[in-house]
Length: 168
Image (cartoon, rainbow, N blue to C red; front, side, top):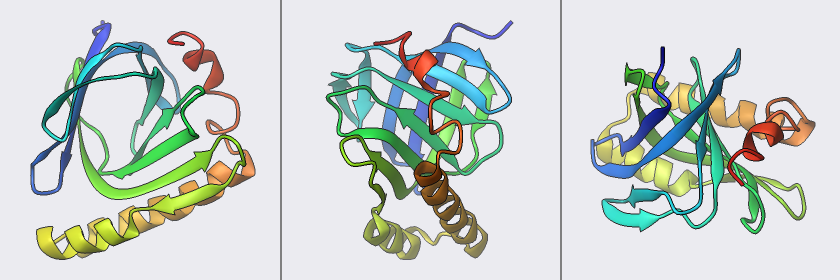
């Protein structure tokens, strides 16, 4: 039986620390594994200790080049997707992801969908030597998410709300 708690570890392509935090396994479905992170969760952000001030739900898809963070108010992003390598599960209780810089975000107030950090992606692509296949997958994932966050595709429309309600 899977563990109730999961350690989520994001690194950059060069192996440097990005984010690291515990999350509660909420469920697993055809979309992936849903994890809840309550307010007050101790975390690490860019190698520094941090505390989550706003709860969120993270969807780790089974085989996709992204993760999705679903946020309540007052966070200005309703949905924040990190473009990542596909999840690598070390065990039932630890998931590793490589953050590839690009982010796709839907703003709460306006519904505006934005592609963020293209400059960071280009910089790290050159500095870390992203292979061509990684670049193709990352850019394709960003394009798909840009459309999905704008057109009401699940899980980005309403499916996440029942899981978010468990951590708010």
